[in-house]
Length: 113
Ligand SMILES: [Zn+2]
Image: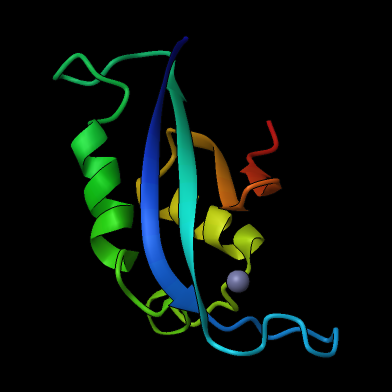
């Protein structure tokens, strides 16, 4: 099995819809640090699990410097939903995504095997 990971920094804004009163409801910014993990038993024709540039274009290219309430395909932009959305953009080689919203606040999406 081959493993690769890509670290991205996303500067953007969001307003989270929450049942907890006062929680993140106002539009505000973050510098999210996102780590995308991919694996594959076989390499592609270019000798890669997945091209690092493709991961960057699929995620950074779509949501950096945006309002995630508008660019995350209608999802409530929690760290958990951001993680799953990132995995979907990368495709089936992606098995884990870590989204660090602030120092010490991390959400992880991981594929069930
Ligand atoms: Zn926030």
